[in-house]
Amino acid sequence: MTSVAIGPLDQLDPRLLEHRRELTGYCYRMLGSVFDADDAVQETMVRAWRGLADFEGRSALRSWLYRIATNVCLDQLSGRQRRALPMDLSGSPWPPVEHSLTARRPGTAWVEPILDRQVLPEADDPAERAVAKESIRLAFVAALQHLPPRQRAVLVLREVLRWKAEEVAQLLDSTVASVNSALQRARATLAGLDAVPEPRALDDDDRELLAQYVDAFERYDIDALVRLLRDDATQHMPPFEMWLRGADDIATWMLGPGAACRGSRVQAMEANGSPAVAQWRPRADGGFEPWALHVLEVADGRVAHVSSFLNLDIDLFRELGLPENPEEPAPGR
Image (cartoon, rainbow, N blue to C red; front, side, top):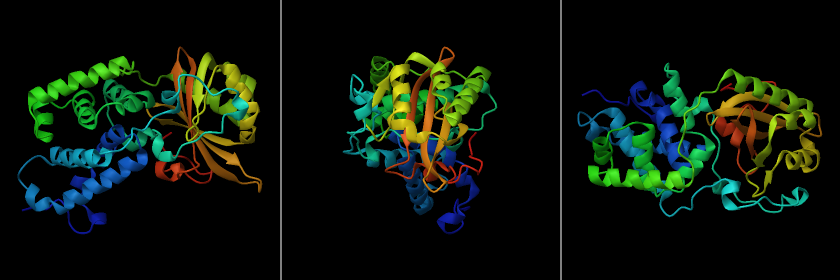
């Protein structure tokens, strides 16, 4: 009998480790957190290593790993409040913007970003990659958190990963009828949230817009930055509950409470299937500190929304594999 593991966990057989990226993507969609997804995948590997004797020859390795990962995620979600984005918590912005930093929640309250390179498959088919990108967009991941955990698993397995109903029923120890019913309810919930994914590849115009955004931000040319925004653009900044609506309010923020970002270093990349910008803010001693990852949602050739995840309560940059020093090349570009 050939074992999948050959020793300690840092010496796992490559056949096991080759599923790590797709399992991370699955757990991220389920949990809405890069930290929790990483923990869930680690626990999945531990349980797989310990259960090899029962596994060998019984089922396909990939299906078995997804079964373990699903149980780990369901365990993590038991009794937990859903993660959200600030715009999910309030029907209106927090006026005036000068006082928008009075309310904040711990990092565990928020949906977190993830770099494309951490979860997306290396697919040659552009259409397949576009579907995968759409399934990790922040709005879709946040909408998934509204679903009960088992419905969430059914929808991700059926709609995103394209598993057959029979396969999902077997994984969940359920019936095909129950799986189909759960899928219908999950679809209805997402439709009500206007969160049905529409695959869209990142095109050359988006990349040019991102380059212009990076240039304007690094020069801190707010007039140029605002010209890249839709008039009704929105922005939020977890861990703060505040969010801004309108290019004018965003400009007021950038020139007011956000003015400490002047002189930042930034790098373009892709996160959550979207253009993104990593930012290192200047320190008083002349150096730089990891500060934020900005994920941009683009519509009609301009920036419609900015999710600015601040590196405050959690070491987000380290978890995303981003360097502490802006002079080092950032991955996932």
